[in-house]
Image 1 (cartoon, rainbow, N blue to C red):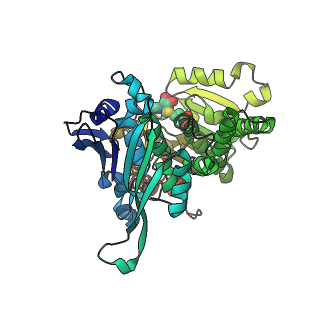
Image 2 (cartoon, rainbow, N blue to C red):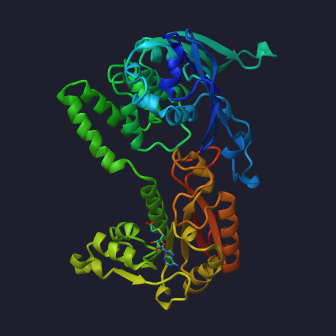
Image 3 (cartoon, protein in one colour):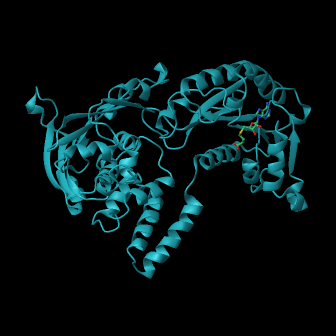
Length: 469
Ligand code: SAH
């Protein structure tokens, strides 16, 4: 899709200084999901137009998608071709200086309202033209809206949900960029990456100076934050606060903050919650946390009385020391303390201390092991220790394209030796289960995307044949 930005401010070629992109050059930027090209179709003193052309790599979006779970929407979807949150990310990365208004050259112009025209092609608008107008007109834009037919060769098929929009305004370039940065994904009502509480800060930062007073700020916050009500409430409360509004808003803000603390779950918390739920459902009372790290899962396990014996093991002494601190082991009441044991050991060597437990959690550990040593791990856990239930979680590599800040081809953590797609994980887990007399079922962890799945994946192994998956 294409975004063009034009000005008739004179000399119009100053637009090149504002965008920090030379009008005589074609420049290409590599982004996590494809390429952005910047070039100037026209550059005279009277009229200058900069174009940002986004070329999303559709194969990258389905990279590692297994044939096993073929779904047509992996291959046939509008994402590579429409103006969406990908375009917003590209704007923020390619025009970062212009958005911040921190230009060294033409510093004064960056702070001056100039006549601007922006054109966005293939903009999906949930709610159609009226929403488009409700979002832009209060900001002072005049709009020219062109709805695209579904297929120009078959006019009888009617209109699509995609629009080409011309927006005109006299404003600072940094403000206009902030408007479209926020409003494009709002119109699309979709985001390609996980939306957590840092999105609230992003919305407030880019909405500074205009969002608080916008008549549609509720709609904007709800859609921008992907309808996560607690995040939306936090944003609205803070916006209202900026407005200098009343005590009720203040109370609501505190309430929202509390809710955030209580309920906004990080991916890791969701992961641990999922593991805990499966452990509880398994009926286990003696539980292993293998590769327990700093003891996050251990502290949750301790809160559940049904877990009478809990053993945490890790190869890292440092991690274990942190766990001792975090769990306040020194001052722990004896009743709790006698249920918990922390041991130093490796999952690659046979260890009698792991015998006799009902269940084992191995949370985000296997990807830290060198792949050739996985066989040893399999023998130790599934062959020797042999708890009835084993829960293994690991990142879903397919989801990596969704992390806004993760460069393509990189792992999520420096120490990861591999990251698997859902198919690769399933292949490994099915083999291990078959070799050791377990059955395994798979569960997603975190918000699921139709194309790339959820950010993390969990395999639940149950020993024997009485289990149904
Ligand atoms: N399960 C924890 C920690 C995950 S990080 C959590 O979810 O928070 C991975 C952990 O695996 C690290 O603490 C690391 O020290 C541990 N680990 C890596 N190789 C190991 C091995 N061979 N044996 C035991 N633990 C290991």
